[in-house]
Length: 396
Image 1 (tube, rainbow, N blue to C red):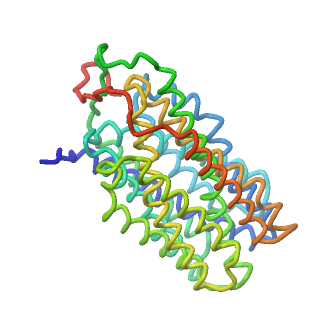
Image 2: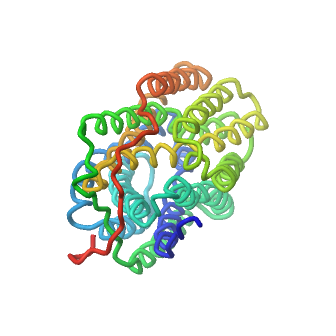
């Protein structure tokens, strides 16, 4: 009989859902930039500064997660996210204020998501790790369907300031749910189970993270520039794309969530990576909304499998005492790709067009796929038991 997933796991997933519901409203920020008279280059920089700020603080967050407490970082991040969303109200034009607020938002996101993701790993049964992390990821993906569509309707009926206010309200709800979380269990490794070659485990984690760095470019090119492309080419509602992407990803995790637990990580990861590259290639040739939406469905299929499965692989190879640091390295690698893409690809769009930008993105993801095929770790992870036990010290 499969191990039971505890209620606390779903509580942290709810907190993550509400937190992401707040952050996902800002997927429409490129549209706000275009309305303010900026172009794709400015939109990419404004989106990218949040990721850059998050990356700057990520090493400290990863180090402190294993010492000061994961729940505390989740609470801190959700509180900062709510306050920052509120501060966006009244920002007039593209100036230093928008960059400062995006930097604060990036720090808030890093604290809340890294804390929530690490808590999800701790609460998830080891025998259902990829499946559980897939369910946790649904709490993120659902917001991609809800917030952009809802935010677009709020903007059409009222204004961006009203959308920012709604984000602040759900941010407060995320903070309150975070405060209800119990103390998490800890992962403990028995000395006899430590592998002789820790270097092999380290190389496996690094290889997985480098592959995700490349696929961060693919994800970022879609998340950041599809809204601007739809708006610029007057193809229709932006929210419809995110809805198609999200429904596809959620369905994939519901029906295929246990695939890598049953058949191995690589058996799922390599097709998922190839499928995400296919979605990026489709966007390079998209000329109308149906083609863009089809790419969204394919992208959701890939994203539904890629992120939780690669995360499970990293956890498999991580020493339990360093789980916070490896989770930070994993999410940071992905975020670095997204941020670098946001800064660099806007210039490509303005000078050469969307098709050229997506072909560059395709090339980067292709490098990531080739690297993982040749250098990625096997499914034979170290025999760390990952036993969960209550902790007697202060909450971690």
